[in-house]
Image 1 (tube, helix red, strand yellow):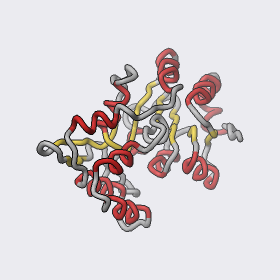
Image 2 (tube, rainbow, N blue to C red):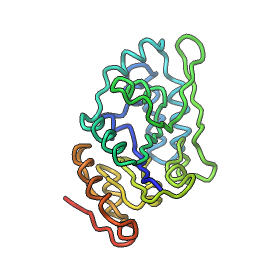
Image 3 (cartoon, rainbow, N blue to C red):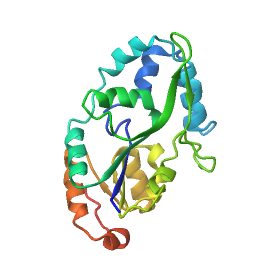
Image 4 (cartoon, rainbow, N blue to C red):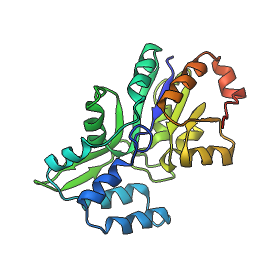
Length: 229
């Protein structure tokens, strides 16, 4: 079976949180109150996103112009090329917006990557709603996109790798052989002694992937010690 990579988007592929960029630009400032309610545990991330997207008000042309200014990690296209050469299944899995992800990746010729994210739908000339085609009723975090379910869907791959940076990646970190982690995800993996390696960017992630693919799967699953500073 081919290895599978579950790769986060916001803060990982994209250098910033794209949903926050859109909310800052086009939403009622009340979106920050909703964000605070989510961070305090009062509402789920799914409920948070649902309410916030309802506050967006802008023609799709304005949304597109904003998305076209979003930067991605400059090493990501080469990382994708490496994964394809090695026969690795690479999925972009995000609790963000599918439309935004496709628009941004399309600028770099990567619009054909499989994308699992919350579905942004237009309702009228300048309003939007959200649906959750990749949610799971059993998701403990109430995420719009259940990353741990996607990580283990279908025939079990030879090797499962998570690449991420934030809280939406926490549950998936227990469903993979190893996480390439930074920021909040790195702290989470360290605190819980989950198999992981710190990474700064996709140039480094590419070298880590090359090294990892040389190892036997049983070794990866049971004796992997990749923690680096």
